[in-house]
Image 1 (cartoon, rainbow, N blue to C red):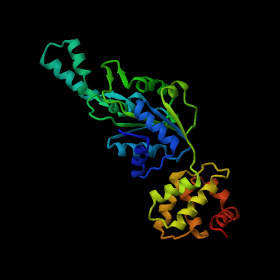
Image 2 (cartoon, rainbow, N blue to C red):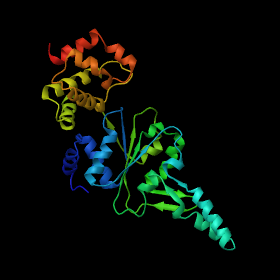
Image 3 (tube, one colour):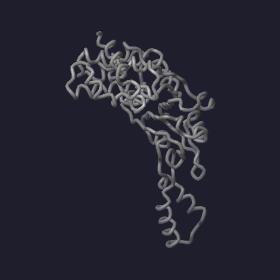
Length: 296
């Protein structure tokens, strides 16, 4: 995959992803040791985009499972094509004396197995490992966490009617959590762990320059400084790096060369996604922050 840690960082940079040393080391070890990587941090700090970047760097498929409350095996792992099974059963009944054992083997064969993301990722037919992103695992139920333990430990899934499916080319598994609830220790023990902080001003500015290269240098510095200061306020939804990038692209689309009060007021909804947050910073508070950023 990658001969060295520095090579991994260069390949991520080629995909416009800037990883600090700690994150790069964790990812390199996950690849080398074939261990799942559990990424935790606030929303918008780059957890999901890391999976996309490493999949592109490895030139392999990214398989994403978006977690939510009530996520079940049928949507995440597999289900049986019952309609086709019923048709096949009627054909068997019409053409020969029905052998129940044979019928069961035929009806619960791979031909009728509908593979969902987790099963797709460990498909033995794969010739190169995929990147499996299990996104926002903290939104799923605890029961689903328990189901993942076999996959994370052995890269295999047991299907009662079919048997055990084991990966010949284990995927790189990346799990993310926004810490809306605590994930069980049993799951974390099977993974390498990395907490991702909000970036420093210098790192976030580098990200903006890399991902929004069309933004004027002065504008890039100002929007980065503005977001950094907004994160220091007591907000319901603190803006992440993704909002910083969206704001940069929005201001470029509006042909802004630098921040001013009108530009900030018109685009505040790009970075703040709560009415209460917008109302709390408007007026003198926002003017003070803007004055600090533009140096007045």
